[in-house]
Length: 178
Image (tube, rainbow, N blue to C red; front, side, top):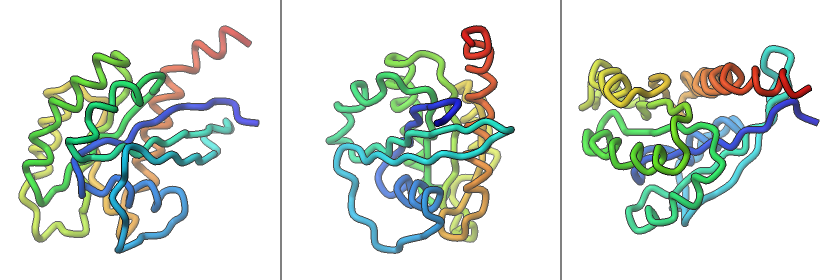
Protein backbone atom coordinates (compact mmCIF):
# COMPACT_ATOMS: atom_id res chain seq x y z
CA UNK A 1 0.00 0.00 0.00
CA UNK A 2 1.30 3.41 -0.89
CA UNK A 3 1.41 6.48 1.35
CA UNK A 4 0.66 8.82 -1.55
CA UNK A 5 -0.86 8.48 -5.01
CA UNK A 6 -0.46 11.22 -7.60
CA UNK A 7 -1.78 11.66 -11.12
CA UNK A 8 1.05 13.00 -13.27
CA UNK A 9 0.63 14.22 -16.87
CA UNK A 10 3.32 14.09 -19.53
CA UNK A 11 2.56 16.64 -22.24
CA UNK A 12 4.11 18.25 -25.30
CA UNK A 13 4.10 18.17 -29.07
CA UNK A 14 4.50 14.96 -31.07
CA UNK A 15 8.02 13.54 -31.24
CA UNK A 16 9.29 15.42 -28.19
CA UNK A 17 10.03 12.13 -26.43
CA UNK A 18 7.12 11.79 -24.00
CA UNK A 19 6.65 8.05 -24.45
CA UNK A 20 10.40 7.44 -24.55
CA UNK A 21 10.76 9.26 -21.23
CA UNK A 22 7.91 7.32 -19.67
CA UNK A 23 9.21 3.93 -20.82
CA UNK A 24 12.77 4.78 -19.76
CA UNK A 25 11.52 5.72 -16.30
CA UNK A 26 9.18 2.75 -15.89
CA UNK A 27 11.37 -0.01 -17.37
CA UNK A 28 14.85 1.43 -17.84
CA UNK A 29 14.63 0.67 -21.57
CA UNK A 30 14.96 2.93 -24.57
CA UNK A 31 13.05 1.86 -27.65
CA UNK A 32 14.04 3.31 -31.03
CA UNK A 33 10.77 2.42 -32.76
CA UNK A 34 7.75 3.66 -30.84
CA UNK A 35 4.21 3.84 -32.12
CA UNK A 36 2.28 7.09 -32.10
CA UNK A 37 0.29 7.59 -28.90
CA UNK A 38 -3.43 7.65 -29.65
CA UNK A 39 -5.23 9.76 -27.04
CA UNK A 40 -3.45 8.77 -23.85
CA UNK A 41 -1.45 5.84 -22.45
CA UNK A 42 -1.38 5.04 -18.72
CA UNK A 43 1.49 3.76 -16.60
CA UNK A 44 2.07 3.25 -12.88
CA UNK A 45 5.25 3.27 -10.87
CA UNK A 46 5.64 3.06 -7.13
CA UNK A 47 8.82 4.49 -5.66
CA UNK A 48 10.31 5.11 -2.27
CA UNK A 49 10.97 8.78 -1.57
CA UNK A 50 12.11 9.90 1.88
CA UNK A 51 10.69 6.75 3.48
CA UNK A 52 7.31 7.26 1.81
CA UNK A 53 5.84 4.91 -0.77
CA UNK A 54 4.63 7.08 -3.64
CA UNK A 55 2.63 5.80 -6.58
CA UNK A 56 2.79 7.89 -9.73
CA UNK A 57 -0.05 7.33 -12.17
CA UNK A 58 1.60 8.59 -15.34
CA UNK A 59 -0.66 9.77 -18.16
CA UNK A 60 1.31 10.04 -21.41
CA UNK A 61 -0.84 12.33 -23.55
CA UNK A 62 -0.70 12.32 -27.36
CA UNK A 63 1.04 15.36 -28.78
CA UNK A 64 -0.79 15.64 -32.07
CA UNK A 65 -3.08 18.65 -32.32
CA UNK A 66 -6.03 16.46 -33.38
CA UNK A 67 -6.09 14.94 -29.86
CA UNK A 68 -5.79 18.24 -27.98
CA UNK A 69 -9.57 18.54 -27.49
CA UNK A 70 -9.33 15.54 -25.12
CA UNK A 71 -6.79 17.20 -22.84
CA UNK A 72 -9.17 19.11 -20.52
CA UNK A 73 -10.99 15.87 -19.67
CA UNK A 74 -7.76 13.96 -19.08
CA UNK A 75 -6.39 16.79 -16.91
CA UNK A 76 -9.16 16.31 -14.34
CA UNK A 77 -7.67 15.31 -11.03
CA UNK A 78 -4.06 15.81 -12.15
CA UNK A 79 -1.59 16.71 -9.43
CA UNK A 80 1.39 17.60 -11.63
CA UNK A 81 2.74 17.67 -15.16
CA UNK A 82 5.87 17.59 -17.28
CA UNK A 83 5.87 19.66 -20.44
CA UNK A 84 8.47 18.34 -22.88
CA UNK A 85 10.03 20.22 -25.75
CA UNK A 86 12.75 19.01 -28.11
CA UNK A 87 15.97 21.04 -27.73
CA UNK A 88 16.57 20.64 -31.48
CA UNK A 89 13.13 22.00 -32.52
CA UNK A 90 12.24 25.53 -31.29
CA UNK A 91 8.62 25.20 -32.47
CA UNK A 92 8.01 22.61 -29.73
CA UNK A 93 8.82 25.20 -27.06
CA UNK A 94 6.71 27.86 -28.79
CA UNK A 95 3.58 25.79 -28.08
CA UNK A 96 4.15 25.91 -24.31
CA UNK A 97 1.62 28.74 -23.63
CA UNK A 98 -1.22 26.80 -25.26
CA UNK A 99 -0.55 23.64 -23.24
CA UNK A 100 -0.09 25.59 -19.98
CA UNK A 101 -3.35 27.47 -20.54
CA UNK A 102 -5.31 24.23 -20.90
CA UNK A 103 -3.78 22.75 -17.75
CA UNK A 104 -4.24 25.89 -15.64
CA UNK A 105 -7.89 26.29 -16.72
CA UNK A 106 -8.60 22.69 -15.80
CA UNK A 107 -6.52 22.11 -12.68
CA UNK A 108 -5.26 25.47 -11.45
CA UNK A 109 -1.74 25.95 -10.21
CA UNK A 110 -0.42 22.39 -10.14
CA UNK A 111 3.37 21.93 -10.30
CA UNK A 112 4.55 21.83 -13.91
CA UNK A 113 8.17 21.11 -14.77
CA UNK A 114 9.54 22.19 -18.15
CA UNK A 115 11.74 19.52 -19.69
CA UNK A 116 14.18 20.02 -22.55
CA UNK A 117 14.36 16.55 -24.10
CA UNK A 118 16.87 14.82 -26.35
CA UNK A 119 19.94 16.07 -24.53
CA UNK A 120 21.89 13.34 -26.32
CA UNK A 121 21.46 15.52 -29.46
CA UNK A 122 23.16 18.51 -27.81
CA UNK A 123 25.35 19.11 -30.87
CA UNK A 124 22.14 19.71 -32.88
CA UNK A 125 20.65 22.01 -30.23
CA UNK A 126 18.54 24.93 -31.49
CA UNK A 127 17.09 26.01 -28.13
CA UNK A 128 19.61 27.16 -25.55
CA UNK A 129 19.42 26.05 -21.94
CA UNK A 130 18.97 29.74 -21.05
CA UNK A 131 15.90 30.00 -23.33
CA UNK A 132 14.38 26.99 -21.57
CA UNK A 133 15.05 28.47 -18.13
CA UNK A 134 13.55 31.81 -19.22
CA UNK A 135 10.39 30.06 -20.49
CA UNK A 136 10.01 28.19 -17.19
CA UNK A 137 10.34 31.46 -15.29
CA UNK A 138 8.04 33.42 -17.63
CA UNK A 139 5.21 30.90 -17.18
CA UNK A 140 5.83 30.46 -13.46
CA UNK A 141 6.64 26.77 -13.76
CA UNK A 142 7.86 24.71 -10.82
CA UNK A 143 11.18 23.74 -12.38
CA UNK A 144 13.35 23.16 -15.41
CA UNK A 145 15.55 20.24 -16.36
CA UNK A 146 17.12 18.83 -19.50
CA UNK A 147 17.37 15.10 -20.02
CA UNK A 148 17.97 12.27 -22.45
CA UNK A 149 15.69 9.26 -22.48
CA UNK A 150 18.20 7.53 -24.75
CA UNK A 151 21.15 7.77 -22.34
CA UNK A 152 19.06 8.05 -19.18
CA UNK A 153 20.74 11.31 -18.18
CA UNK A 154 18.55 13.18 -15.66
CA UNK A 155 15.53 10.88 -16.12
CA UNK A 156 15.45 9.75 -12.48
CA UNK A 157 16.27 13.30 -11.38
CA UNK A 158 13.22 14.69 -13.22
CA UNK A 159 10.87 12.29 -11.46
CA UNK A 160 12.57 12.89 -8.09
CA UNK A 161 12.08 16.63 -8.63
CA UNK A 162 8.35 16.31 -9.32
CA UNK A 163 7.86 13.78 -6.50
CA UNK A 164 9.56 16.15 -4.05
CA UNK A 165 7.38 19.04 -5.21
CA UNK A 166 4.25 16.93 -4.83
CA UNK A 167 5.13 15.74 -1.34
CA UNK A 168 5.93 19.29 -0.31
CA UNK A 169 2.57 20.49 -1.64
CA UNK A 170 0.39 17.67 -0.31
CA UNK A 171 2.19 16.50 2.84
CA UNK A 172 0.64 19.12 5.15
CA UNK A 173 -2.84 18.13 3.95
CA UNK A 174 -2.21 14.43 4.55
CA UNK A 175 -0.46 15.00 7.89
CA UNK A 176 -3.47 16.98 9.20
CA UNK A 177 -5.90 14.23 8.18
CA UNK A 178 -4.13 11.28 9.82
